[in-house]
Amino acid sequence: MGLGIALVAAQKAGVPVTLVDNNQAALDKSLGFMDKLLEKDITKMRISEEEADKIKARISPTTDMDSLSKADFVIEAVPEIPDLKFSIFSRLAQICHPDAILATNTSSISITRIAASTTKDNPRDLSAASRVIATHFMNPVPVQKGVEIIAGLQTSESTVTAAIEFVARMGKIASRSADSPGFLANRILMPYINEAVVCLETGVGEKEDIDDIMKNGTNVPMGPLKLADFIGIDTCLAIMNVLYEETGDSKYRPAVLLKKMVSAGWLGKKSGKGFYDYPPTI
Image 1 (tube, rainbow, N blue to C red):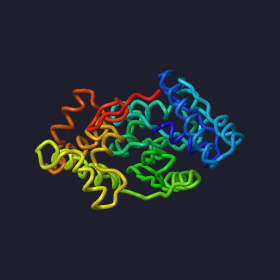
Image 2: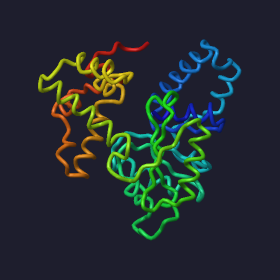
Image 3: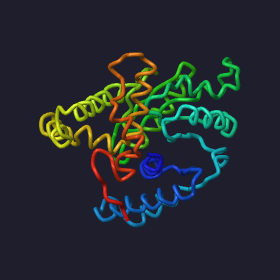
């Protein structure tokens, strides 16, 4: 997801991008994937080789988070692990310059809680917290137009305006959501996927039939189980856990099969096995 955001920022918005990951191998893999995406665009005559070279030149990969000190707009895109995000934003508040927008790509975690991690135990200190906002991009980022914009309790209106303007430069369409569990997209999408998993585990239908009836009956491009594989089974479970824990509503209780699959390491396309099998890519 982070690579997709970086690529669109460099390609559509035309801005220099610092791509940070604490794992060099992950960075190398991301850059290799970027090369494939750009090569595909060249083959389909969407861009020229010269344009592809310029896009790649705008992206600077690094494992050093301190390199974000001069960034004007930071977008965090780590897994949906609250403590991990809190620690990152606590550090960003110290690293980044005092006008930088600190955005998170979270799909379910409270923006108010993330913003609170920047206050150094002083909840009245809004110097960084007022600049925290969610820009929740949809996957795959180069294809999907929608971005959810979510403000926390501390977020300033100027930060909201800046976020909406920046995602527009990236060619995206912003939709605002309240800081409520799951926001808009996943408050609707994840219970739909979860119910499809329940239908599978209770024998209401086979995986192919579940996906086929939704594709052929409701005109969605991908069935819920295949979509879960592409999102990541672990991500689906994490979001359902947030919905269930923060609302206390039993309708958001995660399907047992989701938990079992995560325990087995069957995380979907990224692991090679989910509801479907995926051959390794060369």
